[in-house]
Image 1 (cartoon, rainbow over the protein chains, first blue to last red):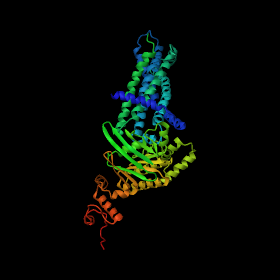
Image 2 (tube, chains in turn brown, yellow):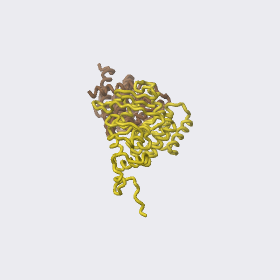
Image 3 (cartoon, rainbow over the protein chains, first blue to last red):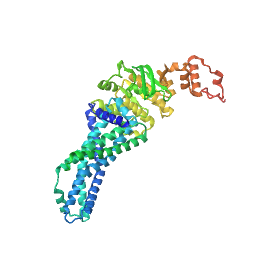
Image 4 (cartoon, helix red, strand yellow):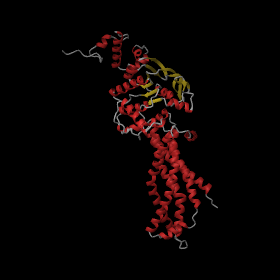
Length: 248
Length: 282
C-alpha cells in the first residue's frame, strides 16, 4: 500500500509544481542558482569519470579484439558507440543521482525538518513551485549538457589511453571515430539523459520534501532517494533501449 | 481579530484537538498554553493553514480561512508573520537576505528601499550590524530576534509565535517577550503565542487559552489566572513550590489577602523556599 500512496503523493507533488509564480524574478534567480549547483557543481566528477571510462573502454576493447582480421580502427568505433549509447548517459546519470540527487534530497529534507518550508508556506509562497520546479528544470537543462561533455571527454579519454599504451595511433583512432557513425545514437543518448534528468531531480525532491523526523531521517531519505533513482534510471534505460533502438 | 470555531483535528485514529473555540483580539498577546502533547502546536498550525482541520473554521477578520482556496488564501497568508520554535531562518542566506526575502518576493521595491526596511526592523529588534552574518553565526536569542524581524518586515496583521522562548535563558526570554508585546501594541497586531514559559503567561498574557488533552480547559487573562480555581490549570501553571509562592505573593499584592487553602504561616516560614526576603542580619 505504501508504494501506491507514495506514487500518488509523487504525482500530486508534480501537479502541485505547476502554478503561477508569485514573483518571476525570484524564481529565475532560484533557477540560475540550481543550474550552477547541478551543472557546475557536478562538472568535475563528470569529467574525471568520463575520461577514465573512455580510457578503460579502449584498453578492454583492444584486449578482446584478438583477430588480425579486425582493423584497429574498430576499437575507436566500439569505444565511441559504447560511450555515446551507454556510458555517458547512464553511468554519468547514476553518478549524478548520487551527487546531485542526494544534495537535492538533503537540502529539501533539512528545510522541511527545520521548518523553513513551513516558513515559506506561511509567507504565502507556493513551496512546490518555488523549491522543486527550478531544480527539475535546471536538471533537465544541465544534465543533458553534462552528458554531451561526458561523451566528448570519454571519447577523448579513449584516445589518450590508446595512444599512451601503444594500442592504436591517434590518426587511426580519429579515422575510426568517423566510420559507421550513426547520428541517431546521439539523439537517443540525449532522450535518455532528459528522462534520467527528470528522475534524478524529481525523485530526490519527493523524498526530501516529504521527510519527517530529524537528522537521521534526512540521511535515510537521501539514501533512499539515490537508491530509487538508480533503479529507475536502469529501468528507464532498458525500456528506452527496447523501444527506440532497432534490433533486427 | 482571529476567531477559532469548533476546531477538530485527528491524526490516524488519534484525536488531537476536540472542538476548540476562541476569539483572539487585535493589539493583544493571545497565549495558548498547555502541557506537551496537549494540542497547542497543532491548533496553531490549523490556524495558519499548515494543517487542515477535520472540522470547524478559522476566521481572519471575519473571512473564513479554512474554506479559502488559491489566491485568496495567499492574500491572507501575506498578512501573517510567524516566529518558529527553531527560528526557521534560511541557512544559505545571511541575515539581511533572510529578512529581505519576503520583501523581494512580494514587493517591487528598489534594493535601497528594501535595505532601509531591513535595517529598520533590525533596529526594532535591537540587532544592528548583523546584516552580513549567517544564521549559523548567531546565538539562539539573536536567531529568534532575526526571525521576529523577518516575521514583521511586511507589517503583518497577525503574528504567530511558536514557543518563542524555548532554549533561551531567562533574561533573553524576557527580552523576546517584551519585544513581542511592544510590537503587538505598536502595530496593533493580533498576536498568538504558543508557550510553556510561565513568565510569559504572567507578563504578556492579555488572553490565555489553556489546552488540556486537546480541549479548551480554561480561558482568561493573566490577572484572572491568579485567582482561578481550575485545578488542572493550577497544577500546570503553579507546578513548583516557588511558583505557588509567587502566585500567593501576587495575590497578596492584588487583594491584600491569600484566598486559597494555603497557610500564610507556611509562606512566611523561614525554612520554606519563598519569595519573602530573609530578615536583615543587622
